[in-house]
Image 1 (cartoon, rainbow, N blue to C red):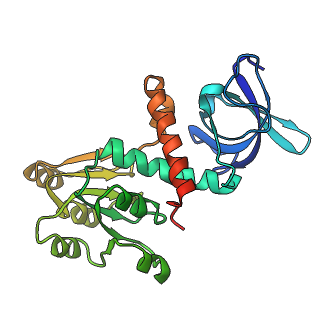
Image 2: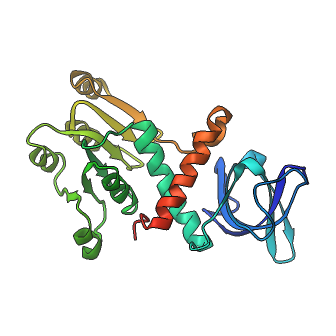
Image 3: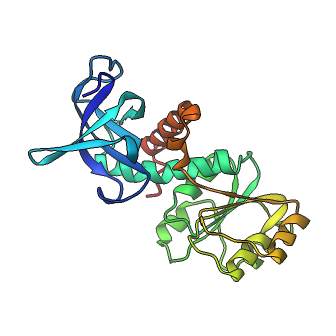
Length: 257
């Protein structure tokens, strides 16, 4: 074991342990620490987010042990279970990346959130002082809808245009993993002048008419890829700050449930 590495007993992991994702996110308990590790002691509950290429694991009886460099380890609040910490942080981390770095949102502006997997992006956007409109691909519980101050949109883009007095929204956060020409046109039609459209579809392609509509609005398109943090060592401090912020929100109850 390296001198700056923790041995972490994995308790919960996001996705399949054998998945080919570029980043591994898991929670667990420190079993032992290297000589130069100073932040945490054995038995501390932690959350780790590390590039797959840097992760080494081995089996110890019935458990999996991960060797994690100290810079990829954060303390997990004891109030959170291992499973909730992993699942909640993944959703919050992606949303924080989208809002603060892809879109650079400002308070009192408007955002339309398309088909999120849960209420995390909606609740987080509201907490940042944004006017939130949203739509879900599938039906949601009436309890969640009555709790939120966000505005549910049933018809896109007509509902958004009506709610904004014909002006459109400053930001569109689009969680669709695939787009056809109808969904692209609907999202663009929701944008205000100088609006920003953040997409999670890595294969999104814009045709000339769609590019022209964005050009006429002086709008812009950006992508949301939270994995980029673990590829960029220069901004590792921002990466850790975002993870800490995600855990703070999760502890305080902004977890979509």
